Amino acid sequence: MPPGWSNVALKEWAVTVAALDRGDQVLMLRKGGIREDGRHFKLEHDGFFLYPTYFHEAEGLLKPDSRPLFAETTREEDEALVTLRVWAEVAEVLEISEAPAVEALQPFHIFTAEFAAKRAYWKPRHPLNVMLVRCYRLQQPQALPVMPEYAGCKSWVKLIEEYPVGVATAALTDREFDRKVDEIKAALA
Image 1 (cartoon, rainbow, N blue to C red):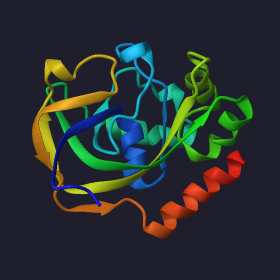
Image 2 (image 1 turned 60 degrees about the horizontal axis):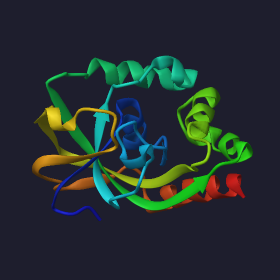
Image 3 (image 1 turned 135 degrees about the vertical axis):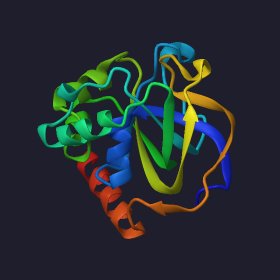
């Protein structure tokens, strides 16, 4: 269950945040950003706001049926404000590094096979972190100014102040979430 307040956010493409918010996807694929310590991702928090970004995001990196969601999220882009709409909690992290595992995940995310493979094989000595996340839609989204401290190619953002999580509704029921997680694990087995 989400906490009352937090100042922790994880940057993620706006289109991915929208897919997680809708329950279309329950996983996040993470390797890390150029400005990460050691240039690879570390899970520093089990719960966090999802901070939607548009940096590096491109319609051509999405499956054709996910492209309308891209158009929908880019209409909302505002360079001066970011709106926190989703709280995420990590249920589990799976590490994968083999091509068959990356291919097995294809039905469970919005990305093209080529992009998923590219993300997986960037820095090939490090595994791809497949974060299984339970997402909650905030009843009162938090609009906050984009600060210079939030910029750059890094995953984690410490917000300048704590924001209320407040009342939040699960994107999926417990049963739906568990079913999707079981399907992902079965595909990887």
